[in-house]
Length: 65
Image 1 (tube, rainbow, N blue to C red):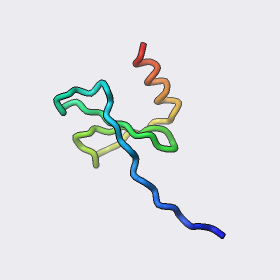
Image 2: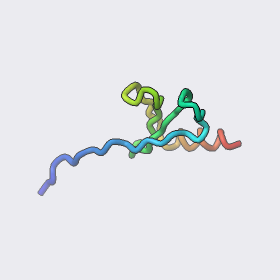
Image 3: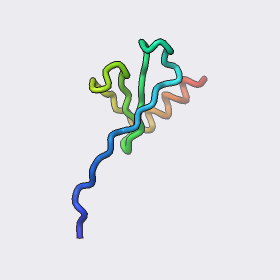
């Protein structure tokens, strides 16, 4: 017996530790099953960029060097 479609929860967004403290340079990200979503925190309903988990991992590794 199928339970039918399950509700999709809203992603949990977090701010980048590299974002400025003056609320003018905030990038947020959210982990989702397909990878990571990235958005501008000043426009939370605006465009989102979706990247794969592999791409995100490469980005994080490159930015730590």
